[in-house]
Image 1 (tube, rainbow, N blue to C red):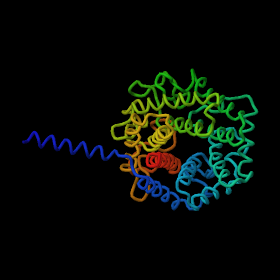
Image 2 (image 1 turned 60 degrees about the vertical axis):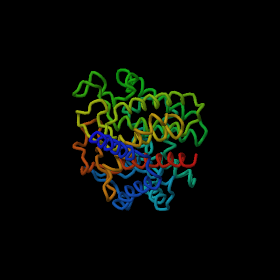
Image 3 (image 1 turned 135 degrees about the vertical axis):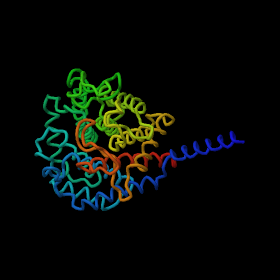
Image 4 (image 1 turned 90 degrees about the horizontal axis):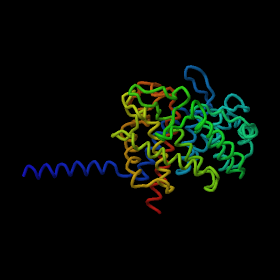
Length: 380
């Protein structure tokens, strides 16, 4: 009798566990996205106001630009006039220009161009693109390709080249972004920032071997790898499948996907250090959200096998919703800006990162893509 009761109890526990990992409904996903986004828009009602973290910076810096990538993804699945106006007013307040001037080659400064282009596609006005196009064209028309000396740059700028190539049907943008990507991947530092053995990326040349984490493993920073992962899908979303380097991006995306599920935490999150859970180990939301974003996109587009990736993806999203989202929409377990696992520590449920915008952008990207995947499951 006791044995039967234990078996029934075990079955109930397993059933509860399986239920907790069910795909959230579209309504549940959307409610979470609206909660976290409305928290931010209420806190920052004027999108033109400069940021003030240790010093004044204009609001078209990269952290805010990543947020607007997420907002445009939310607007795509749930068009709302105030979302569009919030993004439009942001771009217009900067005269559709970039931080540090419109002759910049710095990837962080190009990030705002992703949203400018998305807004242009909704309501075309050439003034929206003029400044960013001049800057990107200057890179296309000059030979150097060593501008992206840190892997975050791949997400900040590479999709801008892909979007322009798509918009103008111009192979030159695709060729230049490959040159920039290939330099960072294969040439920067000793042998490039990508380690094909582990299918993960070092953040910059400072973390090339012989640099190691305390446990002797390579330093693979979660959010840095998340930036690359997100960039690859955002590029493949834009370029033709017969573009000469599409298969190269696809190969890297698939390899990273395999590597990522191997180092996921049991609770669904990823640690800030992907191969060393002892170095500032614990849940981290921004990297986790970017991995959800990539896996949802990969499954939805038939690139990743749902049987393999759906469970890790759902487990990660549920972890964010259940453990990181506060009742008022604030996002916990969010690492601040930096370049390695030590940045912005301690990362806790209640800790406030130096910038609250980019992490929210990552969550919005993830949730919007999951929403589209759920729609595809419901209405194939």
